[in-house]
Image (tube, rainbow, N blue to C red; front, top):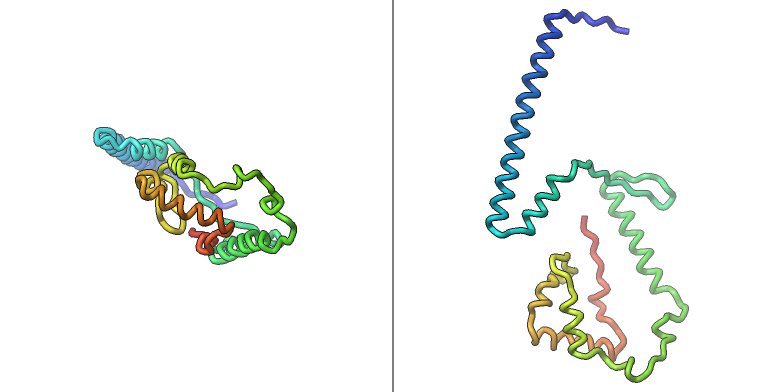
Amino acid sequence: MQERSCSRASTDKYQEARRKEKQVHNRKKKQYENEQVERLEELGQQHQTRKCYRDINILRKDFKPRLTVCKSKNGDIISEKGDILNRWKDHFHELLNSLEQDKGPSILQDYKGTNEEDSAPAVEEVEVAIQKLKNYKAPGTDNIPAELFRYGGNELVKQLHIIIKDIWQKEKMPTEWNVRTIEV
């Protein structure tokens, strides 16, 4: 074990430097918290409650370092970003393409309903489904948010009904709807 050559004076000097650092640190922390409270008050006064509550929740939560790792097919841990993306790409390719390769009869092919159940959805049903969409959700590959559908009006409902009715009658989805993107 190494011997330390610390004198009482050097120890006192070190402790004094630590005390000063703590004071500076605490002062900066209080200053930061006061700035955050002022920002939250401004958001509240501007009636931006969504942003206000989001920032409150961010302040309440502790810092958690993000760990991006993944397991390969044989169970090894992957930590490189490119390798992780390739693994997810392979995983979804296997998952989504295995559904197309299944030769067994599907539930929809075996279903034989009555004429009433086989009729295409009514305009009212499409309108109810649109109104059930939730706000502030991530849009799909078309980048159309749910709010646009909800506030699109009667013409949008009619056009969507035409598309849905066409899909219902042909029993085939547009190939563009099968595009999947994974962004990191």
